[in-house]
Image (cartoon, rainbow, N blue to C red; front, side, top):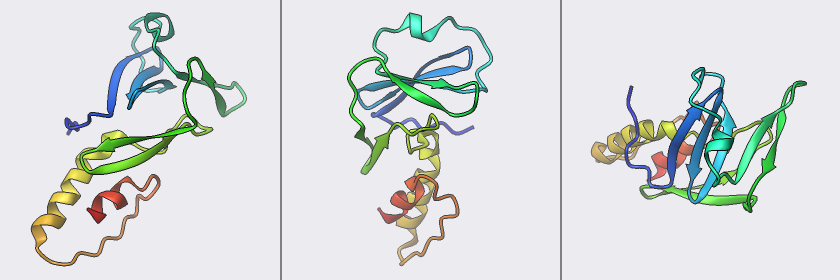
Length: 135
């Protein structure tokens, strides 16, 4: 597994009991993640710096609970790339930061090609790869 190591504006802080605590710029979000099956204690009880927490509904979907002041959207950077982050209605933020290793791969291949490149991005859900290919 490749792990992006050059993020300054994103960090996975902790994970426990189906939730993960992440830092997105200067804001801390607690989001559900069903792959986190271990018990490392209650994250909401362990950390007092959480800005927002996504609460799942038992009927599907859910909502963001604002715990501390947080804007509707903000910018995070990865290297020379800038992304607008927004709390979406289904626990996401509009970006998958773990994909940065793929952005690095694409940027490197394009820069080393020494020619014009056309890219068809079939995973354009967040646009991260598309933005990376433009650099």
